[in-house]
Amino acid sequence: MFLRALAVAAAVVCFSGAAVAQSAPDVYSVNGGQRTQMRAIMVSTSTQARPYAGVRQYAVMPGDRAMTRLSSDTSFLVAVPSNVQPQGVVVLASFEARRGNRLVLVGGGYMSWSTGIHPDRIIQVNMEPAGGSAPSGHTMYRVTPTTSLASGEYAIVVATGQQQGYAGIPGTFYDFGVD
Image (tube, rainbow, N blue to C red):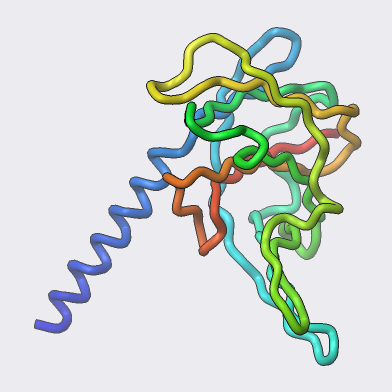
């Protein structure tokens, strides 16, 4: 009886995880007028505890390089729920390649705890309505870095109230690299 209940719970967890992956927001890269849909990547977490230095939590993407490679002047189209301001939902972040993974600090502290992508890793962007087609109840925004992106690893992170996220990290990550 217990094993059957456990199997049902596992099926529900797998189903709900699939639902999150299938309901990921629409994100496109735009380069030279060509629009390409980006694919989300599963993200895990890593936590480090250091004596007298506190605890740090990282969002970790597998592999030291993203499969998607873009130019430094690429912009993005992101579908954001129409009743939400895009500045609180869409973040462009740089990631550090380390030990076969790409990571970014998303939380930590010593006597207190803070969360969110560390400000040193957030790339400043301009966001403006882009018009065009967006899913019902959403508005399409053009997200453009304010400066050309340097060579490195990046991700567009889209966090909405509808997204559960992976590994306890709110939002969906769309990784890419610039050579």
